[in-house]
Length: 363
Image 1 (spheres, helix red, strand yellow):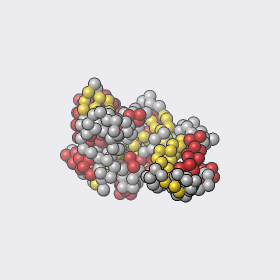
Image 2 (cartoon, one colour):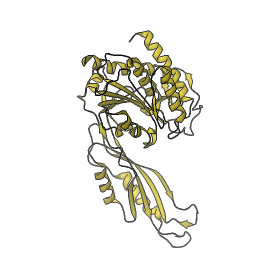
Image 3 (tube, helix red, strand yellow):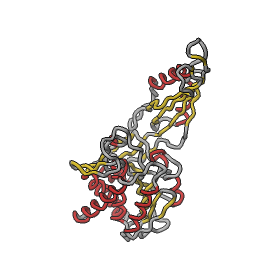
Image 4 (cartoon, helix red, strand yellow):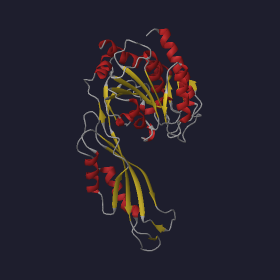
């Protein structure tokens, strides 16, 4: 790629990213950024299609029946936390950084993939079809995001999922199992020896979640991790012993356990009066072989393979996918989120250099 072309692609990607930052796009409220992406692609002469708040497009010389590669990232964001000191919707360039909500997760990856798609879009010599997908509801694992879109795209052989990985190769990621716990007690007056305090029952269960370690530890993804993240009772009065206490457990599962095995073991260890129910069994652990051509291409570029502790739309794709992109996962969901400006250029060149050898090899 020439320096002039890279400069043009990077400048346009930066401009689009700034527009995305300035446009609130919380999960289920991404309609305005969907329109922004749709109009941007059409301004480039690309036929962009839309379903709900998902935007997708095919490469110019798409041929039905030819192997197809998906380039995907999401345009929804979490809500800004209270620790922000900057306006989360005001893109700000300072000290080599671009500040703004969604700049790192996953705006940098998204605009870099869009630039990569534009780079290859009108190449008639490609042995693969390319499909670009800017999806919604990733941050909440919603049903109206990539799952809604995939049946419309048609068969896909493999894909790249854009998330901040410092351009390293996330060849596997943990599954996400969200559990709703409920402790049943009996209401009573707090001043008398009445009732059966549901909080105390919940505390016993929560103590188990805090202390228990699953014996199977993955070389790639490490141990199963359980974190109690929410707790609440059925009343607000100070003088009432609560009859119910609910809690939520965020469970990150390695590839050595099925969700069903995790659930069975947890339920066997729960005290009397505690019920545990999963919200969903969809977000399972996923992986791609290190022998896959795209992984091998990344290794030749000097990148490393690792297992990601976070979960993405990769978990919802029934074909091999590699998670990689500019930015750092440690910055995701933090106050005053930012992306280094040089990471944007590295993202574009990184994706192009990852794909180009595969296209040449298969000609």
